[in-house]
Image 1 (tube, rainbow, N blue to C red):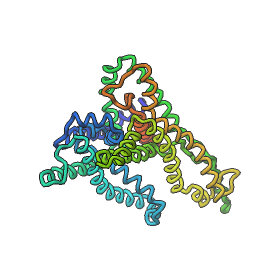
Image 2: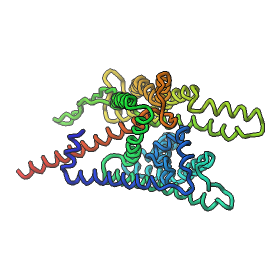
Image 3: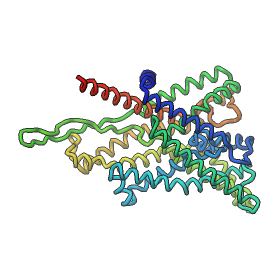
Length: 442
C-alpha cells in the first residue's frame, strides 16, 4: 500500500487527484464546524453519548452531527435513497428495464436517486431537529409564530448541507481517487480518532489504551479476512467452431463474497430498533397510567443498556444480511447471464439447476458473513461485559469503548481497500500506457 502511494505521488496526474481529494475533505471538515443557530453544546454531547441513533447519524455524517452543523445529516439521506431504489428495482418493471440499459440506465437511476434524496433530506431534517428539540439541543425549533422562520431556516440549511456534501462526494468520484461519498464518511471517522485516544488515555490509562489499540488491530484483521473472503465458483464456456476457427472454451470463475452486503444490514437494524424507543419516549408523559407504564417498559427494553436491545440487534443484523444479499444477488441474475453467454458450472445443468446451486452456495457462505456482522454490531456490549468486572471505565459514560467503533472500522477498512484497488488500477493503466508508447516509438 505504501509503495502504491509513493508511486502515485511520483506521477503528476495521480498526485493532482490525491491532493484534490485531500482538499475536498478539508473543505468538508471546515463546513462540519459551522453549527446551526441555537444549539446547546452540553445537551448535544449528552445526547450523542446516550443515543444509539444519534451515534449512527454522527458516524454517517462524517462527524458533522457532533457540532449539529449545516451538514449534520451528511450523506445519510442519499444512502437511504440508494437503498430504497435498490430494493424497488426488482419490484417496478420500469426501474428493472433501466438497470439493464447499461451506462445510460445507471445514469438515469442515479438521477432518480438525487431527486429522492431531497424530500428524504427534508423529512429526516424535520425528524432530527424535532428529536434535538426534545433533548434540549435546539431551543428555537417549532411551528409557532415566534419560531416558524428559524425552523424553516434550519430545515433549508440541513437539506442544502446534505446536497452540498453529496456534491463534494461526486467531485471526489469524478476528479479524485475512490468513491467520494465513502471518502467523506471515512474522513470524519478518522478525524475523531486522536481525540478519542486522548479521552481513553486520560480516563483509563495508557495500558488500557494500548489494550484497545491491540483490539482494534485484531478487529481490522478479522474485517479484512471477511471482506475479502470469497467462494470461487468455476465456470466453463463451450467451444464454438466457425469455419477453421475455434471460439470459446476458456475457464473462469464467479466470485461469491462472504459479505456482499457491507454495513447496510447494520443501518437497517439500528434504524428500525430506534423507532420503538423513540415512540415510547413520547408516550411516557401521557396521563393514562397504563399507557405510560407500558411506554416506560418499552423505552427501557429498547435502550442501549438493555440486553434485550442487543439480542434483537444481533438477530436483526443477521436476518437483514440474508435479506439484502438475496435481493442484490437476484438482481444480478447470474444463471441467466451464464446461459446466454454459453457458460456453465461443471457438473450443473444450465438454467434453473444452476440458479439453485448458486443460491445454495451463497446462503452457506453468507452465514459466516452474517454472524460476523452481528458480532461487529454488538461488539460494544460484549466489551462492556468484559470491562466492567475489571473496573475499566469509559470516558464520559460513552457506550462504545473502542478508539474507532466496530461499525466505523467496517467502513474504514472497506473504503481503504476499495480506494487502494482503484489507485493500483490507475497505476497499472499508466504502466501499460507507457509500455505501449515505448513499443510504438520503436
